[in-house]
Length: 258
Ligand SMILES: Nc1ncnc2c1ncn2[C@@H]1O[C@H](COP(=O)(O)OP(=O)(O)OP(=O)(O)O)[C@@H](O)[C@H]1O
Image (cartoon, rainbow, N blue to C red; front, side):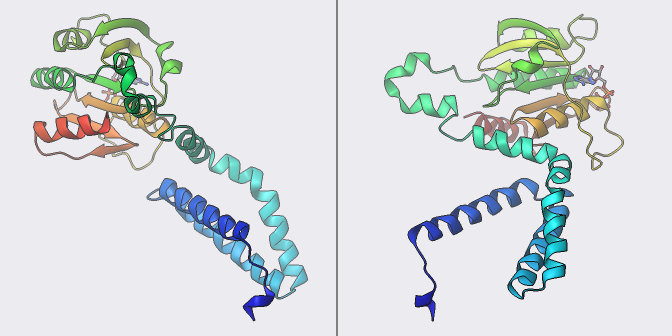
């Protein structure tokens, strides 16, 4: 019977691409409330296709209108996810400047220097001992230029003493976040977008919300020292990354910055 159904290489490619698209959408929405909306839409779509195949004219046209008219509403509902999805596409391995340049050995001199994570973590540990609040954002593939304008641009090689003095309570630079790009501190007093996630426990204030916000909207990672508890948090992809020892944190950070 199958021989009556024309099946070409393009059909196979089509199925593979749709499967890939669905996988990435699932990966993006996993663990968020949006996954339930996505499942709801997928179910309506399947029912619509069944009603079409069974030639149930009225129901299929109602569902058809619902799906096509709802496209704009969906764009509004999934605004954040669509943004993240496009960012994900735009930052594939090819466009990742570090991994791309690393493959071109002869350009060794142009490769960005490795980030001195030991100095950053040393600063965080010292700030934690004195319960000095700090928020450090480390740029990865998504440019953080749009944030630098909200604060003061500087250009200092990473050094734990400089980082500690930035967050020193009486320093005029201590407010807001500090941005690190490659092995340089490139901005201080930066205002970050605040996360509006309802999952954040109420004990966390604006500093934590700001770190979660920027890591949801870009692929940057954040190190945060709490002024209240002195605790050092590592935040990535809108979530707290758990670790048990400072060595483990350093390893995770290094791995994420390759
Ligand atoms: N949008 C923002 N971008 C960057 N930094 C911010 C932003 N909002 C607040 N902050 C920083 O967070 C500080 C206020 O922290 P708050 O006490 O509300 O946070 P918290 O999450 O409870 O952290 P902590 O445990 O350190 O108290 C501000 O002084 C400021 O330095």
